[in-house]
Image (tube, rainbow, N blue to C red; front, side, top):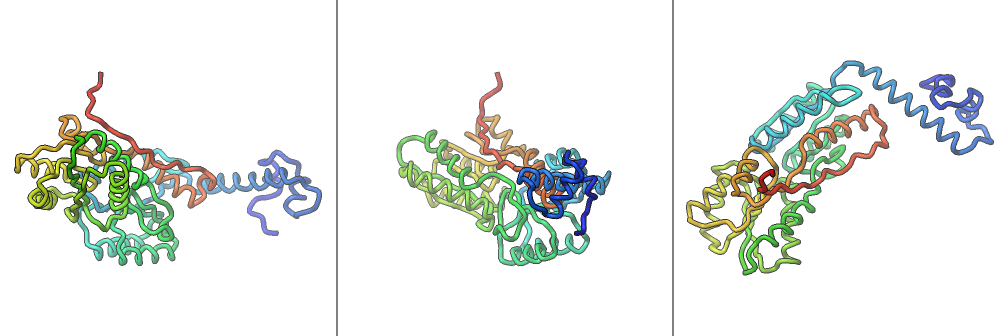
Length: 338
């Protein structure tokens, strides 16, 4: 039997006698189940220690690929740059590939370029298109782990997903908005950056499902494909306001909130309740000024740690049995500090 560690090393780690470990390793009879568990645990501990010693002071390089508005990607970048170097047993280093709008072929070309150059993992926020799915299948075949962030893809194509449970986040927004909105019938404008982002669509589904069941007096209209960019989003909102004079509430999933406010102001209409996502610099200022009613958000820094933990488990730098908790959904309201 080929052993990575000597019986003496395993016995020392397990706190057992050499004879006992020998009996376990050679699968001899009359050994308690608990003893076998202790020996296996000792081997796992030695494996992790060995992996950590090989890492030494080396840095683990991750490639962060994100299609998102600049205000969002800037906040995420700052969080990852603050947290990843602090992770152990080896600090992580990130290479960022950020753009507000990318075509499918550009994302695929970028992912293939990263794979050719070499990487220890990819963090991806991108649309779930057929071309990108085919590219991710190729990366999986090449043993390149991918963690999706905020918006997901099919489970077999990635190592893990990090971010809010999006259907629940949408339902949470609907719960709050329905209780803040006037009791009379009205219409809620739901804005997505793009239908191709599965995370955004999941939020819309959660939101619509809650309203349909608990607040049927609130109708819904969805606009998308503005990609969170102010100019494109503003044009879409302006058209929606012309088509639906009963719009009085907004659930902004995809961003472009400054443009949304400007479109309402241009028509002289007020927003009764404005629900938004993510505490980036724009939403923070809009929240402080009272132009946004509440923001559904999560800690980008905690997410950075979750990303590192998933890669650590994958490479067995940490115990594979380590539990990584789901991202918590938080609510920010425009209440001044006392």
